Structure formats: C-alpha cells, structure tokens
Image (cartoon, rainbow, N blue to C red; front, side, top):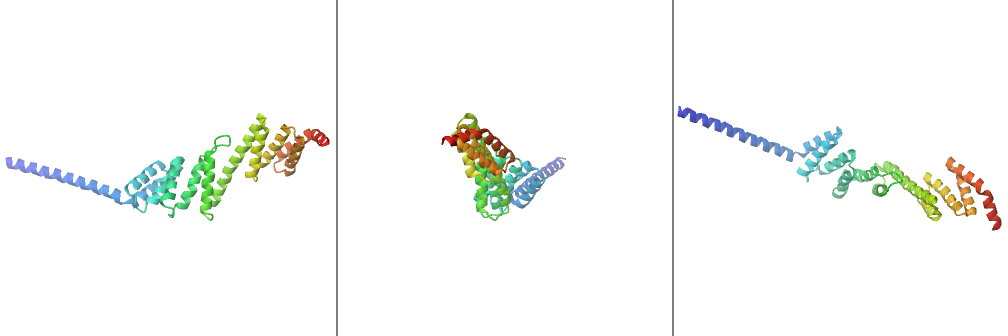
Length: 265
C-alpha cells in the first residue's frame, strides 16, 4: 500500500514537473518569437495602422523599435509611428519621429516623405492671422527646406500649395497690424506694415488692401497729394472690386483738399 502511494506521488510530481517545463518552454518560445520576428510585428502593426487603429498601431510600432532597434524595419516602423501620431493629431510627437528619420536614415526610402511631413506637422499647428504665428513661420521654413532638398520631389506641388497658404496668413497678419495702427492714429507704423506686405507678398490679395491702407495713412496725416496719388493707384488696379470702389469714393471726398494742396504748392 505504501509502495502504491509512493509511486502515485512520484507520478504526480513528474507530471507537475513536466507541465512546468512545458509552460516555461512555451513562454520562452513566445518571447523569442516576439523579439526575433520583427517582420511579423511590423506587418501586424501596419495592419492596425491601415485599419485606422492609430493608438494600437503606435504601441506595436514602439514595441518593435524597442525590441529590434537595429533591424531593417527600424526605418519604416519609425516613419509609421510618426504617421500614427500625425493621424491622431499629436503633431509635435509626429514631427519628432519624422525628424528622427531625417537624422538616422537620411538616404532611406522614407527620407523625402518624412521631410515633407515635418512641414505638414507645423502647418497643422498654424493659427488664424490674429494670433501668434510661430507655427506658421516654422511651417514655411520646413516646407521651403523640403522644396530646396527635393526640387523634383513627389510632394513639391502640395508643399507649394501649403506654403502659399502659410504666406497668406503672414500677409494678413501684417495687414491687420497695419489696420490696428491706423485705428490708433500711428500712421507711420501703419504704413510700415502695409509696405512690408507689398514688399514680401505682392502677389497676394492682401497687397491691394495694403496699398489702400497706405493711402488712408497719408489721408490721416493730411498729406492730400500723396493720398490722392495712392488712391488713384488703387483705383487703377481694379483687381478687388470692393477695394477699388473704396478708393474711388475716397478720391471724391478728398478731391477738393488735394486740389487746394496742389494750388498752394
């Protein structure tokens, strides 16, 4: 009886030991599969990205980069991690990943698009003209850098379009500053803003409005001759019907004053 009991205990112990060993081997095998199979990890993460599960995809790309930082999937995983952040509107985090591509893989397959996406991250953070324009200015710098580095690049047309949008915001910002100075009666400061619009953004709609602002600044200084001359320039352009109409109305109102000023001269 004692022998049977002893045999049973030994058998149970052996079975338990076998289970423990089997479980340990299984865990070790799973760990090896996760850490030594970056191809499968990348494909799984990319599927999550394509399914628009950006948070989950980002976690998987980060795990891949942590476990296999030197694999051939490091570059695409970094790029798609940046794309995950971008699609999640985490633009500063996205820009860091795209900058990492530029730094670590300057001749890689994703270098050009990463350079473009850096500009897009800043572009997405731009603010309306009345507010601070640091992000807009950074977007311009990054988009210009991309166009300079890849003049025949895939994304040049899009970059130029976004660049003009950003430049238009800066032109509007200067114009609004000029209007504010006009309201405050600081006509010289107003004219300085308007003239900068003409110098830097002559082909934007804000240029004609700024020329009208210059005329208004001369009128505010009672410099009737300069005001009349500038209003006439605005009326001749006639690109913006509303601006041209305002210029013509102002010419009628200051006509006599301008004539008297010429007579005195």
